[in-house]
Image 1 (tube, rainbow, N blue to C red):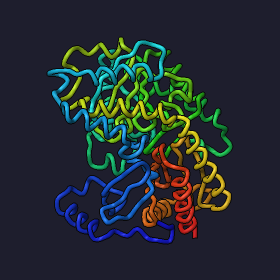
Image 2: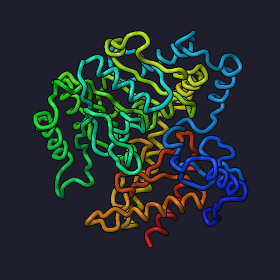
Image 3: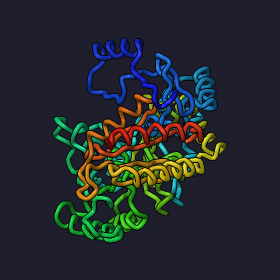
Image 4: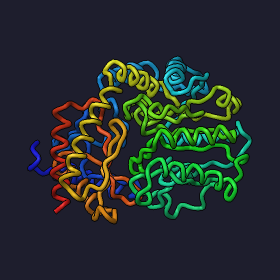
Length: 442
């Protein structure tokens, strides 16, 4: 497909869309009106035969690529043997083996234990339960622009009102929010280290005016804010949060649901900061698309809830655990941690080059292959260019490239391409993306 050929919805997609509108609630949103026929690696073919390069990766779910042969084989072999007996009734080895590997690989030089759930939101819910039970405290602190899920607790910890929270209150009590560094939109002239110092100093005032520290069970944070706009904090800030948690006996939870599994150029994003959380939540790329999430943390914390207090019927199914084991093998065998650095470096180089050409690009940022551009109507005022951002996303899929928007203002283009993407696919996708930005800049 060339960049001058439009990927319009074909007859089958149109028919499926009509059926979707008649049968499916409108709440589950989708970016394009195209329907998937098949997917492999970093490409998706819709039901009408249109081929698209995937820079979205299922919102960070396909780090090892769509239908990786090793993952498919693991799923097929496990499904032929046992689909699900329920771990709480009759356990199985793959659950234990995957837990052992995550205990070994997740940051932190301390003994760890792991439990599995089905989704990222479930992982966060369970991490909060464990933190509250272990500390005997009730309050949980998250950050402005955070996204942690759509269940009652995770929605309460999430910052963006529309669409995630609008009309769904009342929310869970004893949840609080703190500022998170946003260096691009900081007060003019402030250096990153000054932003960090200001926010970290505010913690103490927060504990005086909002909630006493001895009532705070946990601070939960994304190592890179995802839905918030791919906002990357400094190592100084992360280390400062760790010190505050240590000072007051607060459990630090790292939400690595989108940042984990080689995405940021490390196996886990917290490794970029030299910080280990007490509990880490994992999902998305953990099993290449199978429903699975994990909560990995200090053994002494994880063992506080008693038998039967944690779990779920489908949690950690044999098929999902088999996929998870295959994913870890693929990451190691194909050097995807290093590949993330290469892919992200190439994208950031292109974005910075375009920033010199197109005034609409206000900021370029990212970590590894988790990269973004923030679009503005005016670089001086930094007025968000929300409509232009939506136009770029639309122009991209119209020309064979899947991308996503994000940010509290809806003006951030975010990209999470499968790490197995070829150099040719990457360059072709970047060509489509630049064309879309040039069109939106006119």
